[in-house]
Length: 215
Ligand code: DC
Image (cartoon, rainbow, N blue to C red; front, side, top):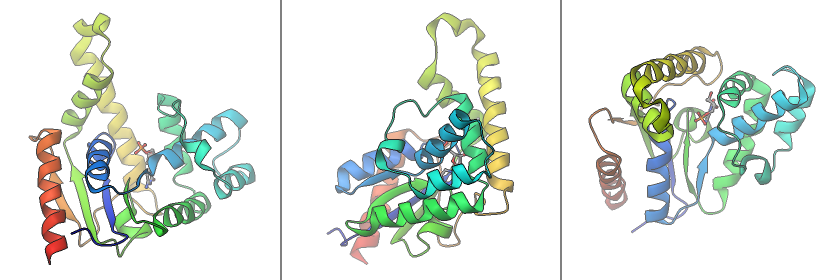
C-alpha cells in the first residue's frame, strides 16, 4: 500500500544515477517526479542569456517567477549551463525562491524529488530519504557512455579524464557552498551505486520503500 502524498527524497552528486532511479520509481509508484536540478539549470540559462551576474536582481526575479515551461526544455544540459547552474545555486535568494517551487510541486500528490538538499532542507520530513554515492571515475564513465561519440572512441580514456575533472569541479562547488551544501541527511539511507546496475539500485530502493510502507 502506498502512503498518501508520499514524498521520497533522492539526493546525491552529479551523474550518480538519481534521475534514472527517480524516473523508474515515479513510473512504478505512480508519483509525480521533479528533477530539481532542472530548476537551477533554467535559472543558470537565464543568467547566460541575459549576461548578468548570479546575484543580480534579474536572476532573483526570474527564480521567483519560474514556470514549468522554463524547466521543461530540452536544451538545459550543456556544459555551459552545468557551470552556470552551480553558480546560481550558491545564491541564497535563488535557493529560497526555488524552495517554494519544490514544496508547491509536491503539495498536491506527493512526489519523487531528486536533488542535493531535498532530505536536508526542502523536505526534512520526507517519508523516506535516499543518498546515492558513486566514485567520480564510475560517474564519469557512465556519463561518457551516455554521450559517447563513436568517432572519438579512440580517445576514451582522455574523454573520461576530462568528464571526471568537470564532475569533481562541480562536486567541489556543490559541497563547499555555504548554503545547503551537498551532504546526506542524518536519516538518509546511503546507497553506494559503484558496482550496481541501474536495475539493481532500483530493486534495492523499491524494497526499502515497500518495507517502509509496511511499517
Ligand atoms: O543535478 P544537476 O546536475 O542537473 O544540477 C544542476 C546544478 O544545480 C548543480 O550544480 C547542483 C544544483 N542543484 C542544487 O544545488 N540543489 C538541487 N536540489 C538540485 C541541483
